[in-house]
Length: 133
Image 1 (tube, helix red, strand yellow):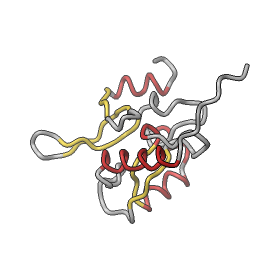
Image 2: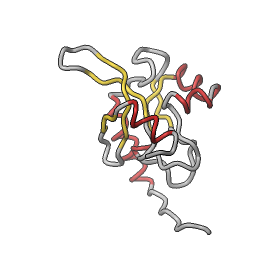
Image 3: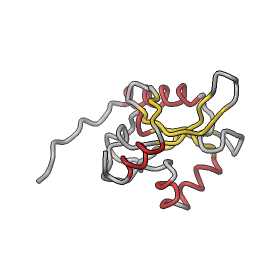
Image 4: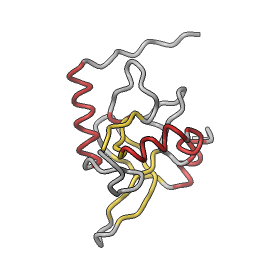
């Protein structure tokens, strides 16, 4: 059975999605949090009509973006990619979180299409990735 078609975002909506994701990530590579080349807005799930939305975008530097492209299975398992069949807003992502002490730690989250980050536990992330959630 073929499901309903999703409306393709307009050019203005895509521009807004890129801006929300860039602001959310502070244009900093979310994989290494360092300088690994110019920051790029990466589609977590390979780009297709209708999926340029904040939940499907992340900032990666050039080297980390290339790593993701060259190691798709590892990128998927470690939260940097979304399978074609999944909804990016429900698929866990990895990112860096700033602590109240000014340090950073890596964790799991869900990205919303409003540009928010909802932190989740590693257990919930694994359950979602394994199809239990």
